[in-house]
Image 1 (cartoon, rainbow, N blue to C red):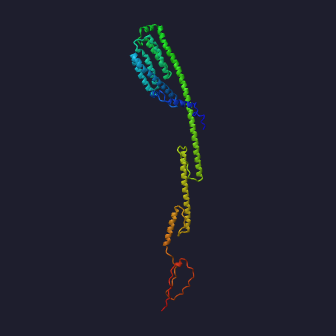
Image 2 (image 1 turned 30 degrees about the vertical axis):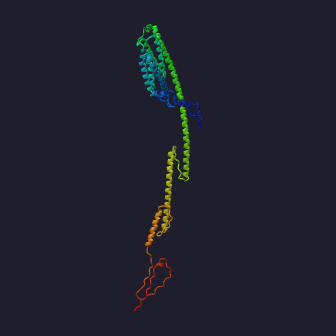
Length: 407
């Protein structure tokens, strides 16, 4: 079978080769492999579905984000919380704890929960950052622009439509922060008292949030569609590879089946020619193993049946010969050639009985004619000169009586 055009050929630029190379590269340990074993979900298989691959991509991205955020948070705890503003220690400590919880869920494939925790911890950290200051001065207004960072993370770590929920949350926070949420200094209070200035201060972060949400949503939808197309191409390539492998397996099974059929036909021919000692070889993995086993059993039974038939024929012939011999020698020994059947025993019994009867029968004597003892003696008839038989020759001879003279 020509495998040159198969999807799993040796072409280094084939789709399957590229997919397997990418999968091997993902398995190759990198500098962050230790962290991925702690915070990233397990690597999916080559033939994983789109949702599994997308979940792994998001989970790995979340794990990298968590590592960066945890590192930055630790640095801020040491530098900012320890030397600049001790009021930020609670904020930074809570952020670090929630990030560790998000890593725990991310490792266990709870990607949505982990992504929500990452976005919320960023939102909460930035929204409550003003609590570390006694008054809200005007120079801290650009802090609202930093809320686009969690919005971008929401678009990247979560499904694309989550970015709009985060956008509305930020807009509500802007309104609450500029109206009643934080204590403001006199300068900012005077600025917010002017409606035009209030609208200008509020409109700028809202426009930034809205534009960022639209761009992030469109970007992530495009990325998602690209990943879906790549996943479909991967699935098609893997399916082609599986079909090619299945074709090879079927071709191998076909050749094996043809060989086994030829062996069975050869055994049939030899049995038809009278060779009942031949058998179909039974090998491990034989496709026609049940047929071969049944045929071997049939050959054995046929051979035994033919042996029984031959034995019965010999017995019938021996019976005919026995009756013919018994009619010819009813009281004498039967000359017999052994036949290997049960009739041989019957002949032995007959010969033994005939020999016993011949031994018990007495020899036969020829009767002598009576002679008169009274009156004139009569002349003895002349002896007939006859040839004595074998039985007569064995008879004892008695002396003649003398004639009596009257006184």
